[in-house]
Structures are given as structure tokens and as C-alpha cells.
Length: 123
View (cartoon, rainbow, N blue to C red):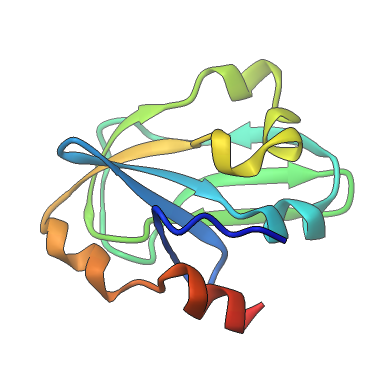
């Protein structure tokens, strides 16, 4: 399993990648593999202000439902609408599909997340 080194990771299997002043957030390949075929991605509240660790989205597969957590405190500024009709895009390429964008209260908070090597050691 190849884990991109251009982003940070959480112990709950989210990835975080900087894009300007916001962060893209998705789930790791390991997470989508464990969940199986995805059938729903949503419940993202654009405009919501969340603390790190708050539930930001829900993802459902044929096997289970799982919460997706905010990796840092901030405001949800976008949802990847393509996932509404095609949640399986995450199954096809988990690192190419972000679920939501968050504008962090403090961008430096991402430095406290796992790098690729630390995440690899965890999984």
C-alpha cells in the first residue's frame, strides 16, 4: 500500500492536504478498503464551525457506517458534490477524492498530525 507523503494523517484514517488557505480532507486507502463498497458520503454541513475531532461527515458502505472527523478546528467551506452520486469514487482512488474542505482556525495545528511514515506504522 502506497501512502502519499504530501499530506498528513489522523489515527482515525483521515488524510489532510493543504490547498492554499484550506485543507482538503478525505479517507485513506486503508479505510476505504476496510469499509468496502461505499454507497453514501454526506451529512457535511458547509458553514459549520467544528473543533478537532468533531464529526464532519458520514460515510456508509455495504458493511458499515462510519463518521469522518475534523482533523483540525475550523470552518467547513465545501463538500465534494461529485460524491453524492458517485461515492464509489473513493473506492477507486481514495487519495484523489476529498470529502470536504476545512479552513483551519490555526493552520499550524496540522503539524500535530501523523506524517506518512507514522501513519504507515500505525496500520
